[in-house]
Image 1 (cartoon, rainbow, N blue to C red):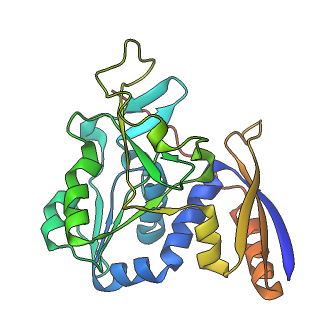
Image 2 (cartoon, rainbow, N blue to C red):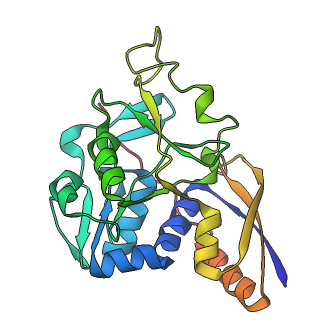
Image 3 (cartoon, rainbow, N blue to C red):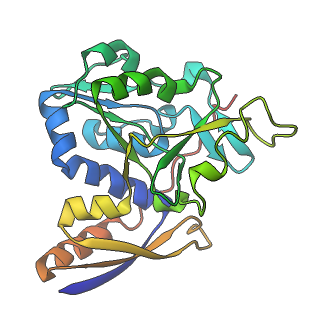
Length: 255
């Protein structure tokens, strides 16, 4: 057994998570033989880029957190969801266009905004009708469609969703420095962090034991990774190549 220590910036984590998703049997099977529906989100945009190659990730977002606060992109600037059917990119399609065709072997990818103490993914809702999650969650639950929710460990929150559930909606704020939102937990969603990505790619365990940084390392996560010698050797090489992933590109199409 060998041990590996690595610190990942948020962008490096997003790239890792995207590659980890593509290493899972669930996602590989959906992409090859069924529907893989990648909805808008920053982490999700890295998955689309991994599949398609060059891709404008800044267009694959609706809500976004910026230094000035919670924000929403201009609707006309956004790409559609990235819908793949048997490996083919269905350009211009949104998840609502294919929802009735989906079943248990298909996969919906939806980035999350927080991960609570119960490991439940949480999503912010700027739309009064529930946004993307509101458009598919009922159908996905009814038809047992697989929902995978990629999220970096930087988004861990030290409370359970129940601690704030029902305490506010998007129209309840007296003051909002940024876009006012509501919030929903998605217990039907499978959280997929750096830990799951590393396990999928290398069959080793990863545990976060420190977080944060400065000079561009803000939001970073430091991991203790352990496993069989040859697997850790592979993980080490991968991480060396991963280091230096540029930050997410500047988003300049905000409402």
